[in-house]
Length: 96
Image (tube, rainbow, N blue to C red; front, side):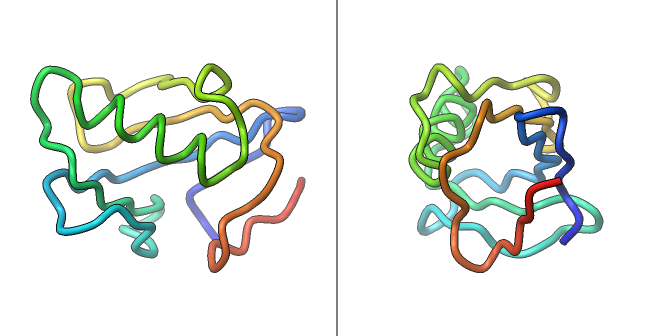
């Protein structure tokens, strides 16, 4: 699967975010990025905060181990997950 790389023990995701969706979910690929749909609106950082919480839960880590590296005001984002403990079904992520 495209859309990710390993940096030591950290997983770095290239994300295409679709805010204001009907439900929170991983939605395959958008080009070479992992597409994520979220219910949160793209207003006042709500979608970014919701994305961090969604990824923390999905990868089994505390929220403080998920950080937005780039794309704060853009749908194209790069997110770092420090030492993920599990991988969501269907993403086919393998340790590098």
